[in-house]
Every structure is written in C-alpha cells, then in structure tokens.
Length: 482
Ligand code: 4AD
Ligand code: MG
Image (cartoon, rainbow, N blue to C red; front, side, top):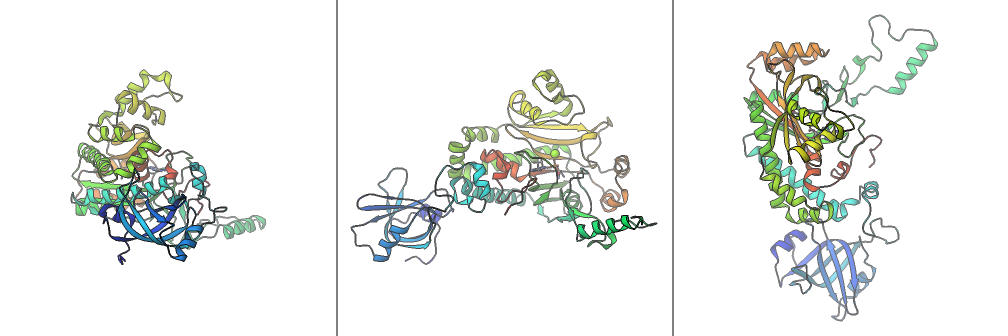
C-alpha cells in the first residue's frame, strides 16, 4: 500500500488507474443500494471529494462491514482500494474499496454540519467547523493561494519582504482608531482614582500624570498597528523596494460587511516612484492576482461562480484585461454632483466618498475599476505629498465594482519643511515622528506606496458577501469568539 500519504488532490491529478490507493479524510455523504455502498470522502486539499465504492457481496473484511454500518457524514475515515475510471458521470475516477476504518465518529444527532445548506450566519457561529464545508474549504484554499501569489508578484520584481512591528507607539493613519497595548491594570487604576476622590486628593499631583505611563510596559502609551507603512518607508529608503504583509488592527466601530477590527494588509513601498508609477504597479498587481486566481484555482472559482456569485468569472476575466479608469477626485465629485438626487448623502467637493458614491462611479459612470487621485488634504493622512495647488494631495484609491475601496495609497511628502508643517498643522507631536522626519533629512527621495486589504481582495475574487467569511476567525465590534 502507499506509504506516502497522498492527498486527494494528488490522487486526482496523478490518476494512477489500477493502482492501490489510500484515502484519508472526512465523509461528506454515504449512500447505499442493495449491494453497493458509496462513500464520498473529502480532505479539503481540493474542492472535489473522491468516491469510494464498496461491493457488499465481494467478501469485505468484517471490520469494514462494521465500519460501513457506523459511518455517517462528518466521520473521519481511512479507506483503501484500487483507483479505477468511474462509470458515474461528473467524476473521472473512483476507488473500488477493499477496506475502510472509522477513525473518529460524528454522531448525526449532534454533529452541527449533518444537514446541508446552512446560513452563513449559522456557519459563523461554528467557525471552528465551517472549514469542513464546500464554501469555506474553497475560501481557505483561495486565501492560501492568493497569499502565495502576492509573495511571488513582489519577489519576482525585486521587492524585499519586510516585517514591520505589530506593537507601535505612532498612529500612522492619524485616525485615532487604535487598540491599546498595556500591562497597566484598569481595575487598579480605577480603584486608585476612587480612593483619591474619597480622600479629596488630586489625581494629578504637580508634574505627575495619571495613569503614569512610565510604569507601563513600554514606558509610554503603545498600541497595535493600523499600518506598517511608516516603518516600510524607512526600509524602502535603504533597500529601494519593499512590501509588508501582516496583521493590522483598527478599533473603528464599523459594523459593515467590509470592515474587520483585525485584517491583513499588503503594503508595498517604492523609492523613486511617483504617483503615476504607483498607479501602474497597483493596477498590474490587481490584474496579476485575478489572473492567478482564474488560472490556478479554476475548480474553486467555478464553484464561486456557480453557487456564490453568478457572473463572477466573466466579471473578473473582463477586469483582468481592462484598463482601469484614472480620474481625479475633483472630476469624480463633478460626476456625482450631476446625479446628486440619487444619493442619500449629497456629494460636495471636500466630502469623504460614501459607498453609494463609490458604487455609482465604478458601476455606472466608469463600468469597472477606477483609480481616484488628488483628494482634498483634509480627508487624507498627514504623510501624503501636497500638490502645488496647496489644497489636494497625491493620494490614490482604487475602487472596484461591488465593493468600493480595495486599495489606498499615495506619493509621500519627501520635503522636510512641508512635512513638518503638516504635522504641526494637524496638531501631531513632531517629537513622535523624529525618525520618520530623518528620512527627509538624510538622502530624501520621492517615494510612493499603497495598502491592499487582503480580505477586501478575497471578497472581490470569491464574490463572498461578507468580509467575516473570508478570514478564519473574524474580529469585529462585539465579536471575538473562538
Ligand atoms: O486606506 P488605508 O487606511 O491606507 C493605509 O493604511 C495606508 N497606510 C496604506 C499605504 O499607503 N501603505 O487602508 C488600506 C486598505 C484599504 O484600501 C482597505 O482595502 C483595507 O486596507 N482596509 C480594511 N480592510 C478591512 N477592514 C478594515 N477595517 C479596513 N480598513 C482598511
Ligand atoms: Mg483608505
């Protein structure tokens, strides 16, 4: 018998007809006729299950007979037999079973996935088991394959993968949506405050702060990062082209189908790149990933097209071969103003675009992905390069139909005086950014970068409806189960 422990995916691609094979996995279904038993086994290595067929009249071992009686959906099994061309339609090969062992039972009265067609909401409540369904198995494989494609894209283009810190003392996006990291005990602090109040003592004796962060683990307030960009910039000014790919945290209270409190972001940063170069590589990157999904994940993609979002494949194929529209924020707002009566939130120059606006632009005005540039500086982060008009910055957002913003990026302000002025204007503490400003003091270069939300990409590629279903264990307001 084979000692290599082949996955079903390998068996189905190698198709060693006439050879003995061992199949290990979880039972999807068991069907019986008068003299045959059909067991569909899936191991998640690919979308397809493999059918193991047993002939009850063929003198099967007694243990196999007993196992076949006990096997139910969800049970884990190891089955042996000979691979043969299948007479059944819809499958190329099957296993003519000679033996099967029941490894772990899944009692039908308590196994939550005994029945099919559960709602996504229900499956979210059993996130530890949902990967055993067709949909979540396919999402898991897509997630893994896309991560691989992302590394390949950058590695093939001379980018260095850099690991930026997860714990940070600076707020990159300046939006104040950070999770605190502390070893101070809130209960003790509250008790101290209460005691001081009762004794009539001031909480802030001359010169001291309360709570005193000097006593905290890092000796100052720290948080989980909202972006690895600032540190990525430091590496880009040493090794030219870098990318980060890691977890990112935002304590924004957004209960939407597109926001997570913990998500993964890919952030390339390129020295000597202007905004135009940045747009070029962002567009090339998205199209590359779409093609990789279509070419290398055909079976899973066919499932998403058939069962999750009809028309998905056509839409992605068209996008992969199209030119993304490139439009300034000012031009886009003019388009929106022409159709103002269609929106709940009336668009005006200076407003942050709402999803209804993004939807209208991508789906109705430009009929595909749009790269919007040159946003008002007031609605963008401090580090973006100021245009000569003094009002707009060299920002770019890539918007896609059905989803909205998938990428946010910019050319960075490389001029020391302008960047310092902007930091002061926004009331940020210059001393917090001393190292970031050093990049503009020593060997400053034009540079650009962007951030792609990994889960947004997966939503777009799989057609799944909720971002909570494209990450194994979603974190969102009031949601951190498992
Ligand atoms: O537009 P954002 O906030 O840009 C940055 O963080 C920059 N520092 C990136 C850079 O230039 N290096 O976020 C980038 C992308 C968004 O376009 C979106 O795809 C995703 O990150 N994103 C989220 N995804 C899921 N949940 C959230 N709460 C997200 N917030 C942003
Ligand atoms: Mg953004």
